[in-house]
Length: 457
Image (cartoon, rainbow, N blue to C red; front, side, top):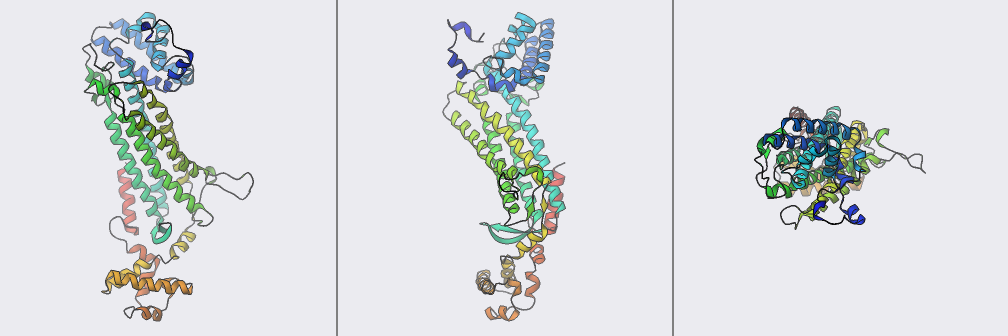
């Protein structure tokens, strides 16, 4: 029986029922709905709607139901009820009879689902924060393992300046720390309890909402009933956090796909995160990374859809808001799976240090050091930039690197060059020169690793 059936002389059309019912996806809120119902039973006991025996019987039945849904959540999904709230109420009636019908006193499905959803989002955020921390740890471990390995740094996918491979790792640690920060902030903002807000105007019973909220682990109770039942900012924020984080994971995937390519050969991915070709026996494809990159669009889509759903909704609750769940229920596990898969990829990476070093030495990536050498000799940087450009042209014409030019060739462009130019052009010197905070010198990267490890505890 529908929870709202008394107003209607006939039941809903079957097509409408299928269109309207949300149990096939909101069954995932079963645990949260039961936990919230236990808390609400306690609140009703405090205002004498339930006596002690009724409360005890309801809570015992709810806890038994909780064990049942944990054991077989899929059975809830196909139970045929309109939504998770009607399922729980019906199952409770089966256990304690008419007593179950008292539990909805002073409560609406509007504040009920808003509470359930916040509980689910809070739990999910905690799992994702743990996963991000583990991924960060894997990047830090790789940075420690490869400290000293030199990699060509790129801009515009052109070799630009040499960096430490560990510096590349720590760049993603920085991104992941921002992901953590955003998600933690979102979790803190969502942690206010709507229960007791009723349908939109508040409850008529003298419920101590602050105590109720704290009992469910919330920071406090929401302060406006209209906003409490219609607010889905926390869903938008979670999807925003997921989308930004997926950008980072997708960029990482793109870097590693390129590094893993036959043209670069900088890394080799483990067999556990790659697959082969059905036709070409030699292939080892970076499928895990490509799927991370591909699934990013899926998360973006959920974020965009949620904002479009909310953009013109009047206060307070509207059925449109049922669309808040499917996208999030897909995006959050997708984000979590991508974090775990990224961790597996990073954990199994083998770095080909000889190839990264050879690539870093090519492409005249020490040209900036040469310009800085001229600045140290008193030549304005813009003039030095032009001089170095001329020398690069000379080296390219001869098929050489800058360090292969003779001193006479250097002097043919400008007389200020001396033999002390050669140590400046050594790749280790290029790395060592980047001593300022955030630079790629071994000292700075070591400091970044120590800072990240300290912050991760």
